[in-house]
Length: 265
Ligand code: URA
View (cartoon, rainbow, N blue to C red):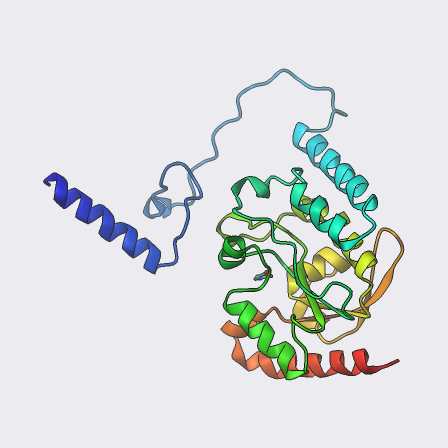
């Protein structure tokens, strides 16, 4: 192949990747999945290391524990929404931040009686620096409008993770635990009357419950580290509803339940 041909072929390959939804590299070199027919390649043998005392925790565990403690300390010292926003923006304890373009904290009205909590920023949110601005966010806006609400007027929107996980993978328990003190403090400072939990990941992060299919539509209570208790309704994530429009009927029932709760004294 001549050099221009190679460039054209490389550009065509990149275009094809983009059309297939591949938008970032997850490993330094490609893996030929066709070679996996007999099962994935064996994991590389660990290099022998000097024996450690059985009780010594792994360095990653120590680092995670330290990050969680630091997040707790910083979050507890915040006594206003602005201070908390600044603290989250300046926090370096979550490794996801290294691969993210922006910190994505909240959008909407701090102090509103409704707080929506989703999973984590995606590509659009990472680019813009605000939660729920992509297609799922547009559906969320339409869902809120259906019960007379909006992020401009009377709703605050946030996530349980503030930095985009690479390739939009599900956040790990450690990443969730590191962000949790800030989520708790946001709830304590803004004092919503109700929380709409959007999807299975925030359901697990906030309530320790798995299975959004069974949990949706049933009111529960989120309890923060500082002892605040707020009524919370799990429902489907708007991205799920984009894939499964038949489930919008159940989501609509949840929205009406939310509206009724917010209208109660
Ligand atoms: N999905 C989420 O859970 N949060 C966002 O901010 C965007 C998409």
